[in-house]
Length: 254
Image (cartoon, rainbow, N blue to C red; front, side, top):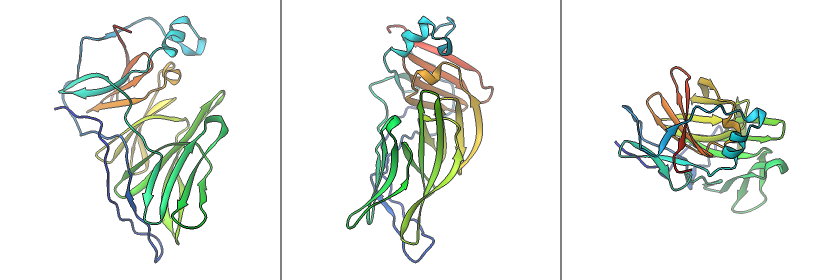
């Protein structure tokens, strides 16, 4: 059973903690896929490579991988293939009274701000924006930064209270978010340090990452049962969500 990374437009009406409300109207996009089970098939362009890779010691194979092409993945007719590009992400949500906008300027900062249709806007949170997603009517935002020795990430919930949007801290992710996928109201998230499974705003599974993927910029995910695949620079990693085992794959033609 195949799938494609889709852009979901959802009309959500939320109940505020006051006599006023503000609902997200449209522009809510996040990467999602159907819930899939069964055996995973890789096409014949993938190969496993046993050469040790250690980005922490800057070996030449790591340098080559770090400067290789970004590999985006998708599933087509039950086969994991190389996709044309990363799934789309937008940086704003449209509401009745304006827009929630996220910005990420790297080491120069970022913010989550509300820009009203009329009047002055305001900043909900000063932090680098990494993505929005919505589960069961709850609006979440991922933030974080990895730069030099800094590496941090957080999950916030956006709530509309007393006529104003606020960012409430939910989770300390301990590392900057990279790729993520929403399946049946469950968030699968790859940070620089780990794969996290987050349900209802809580981490239900955490698997420590390989010491090389932090420098290879994970960009896309496919999840089939307990098998998570991440596309990244110069290849693809498979993470067994049950055992925690990690397998590296590389493209033959790269």
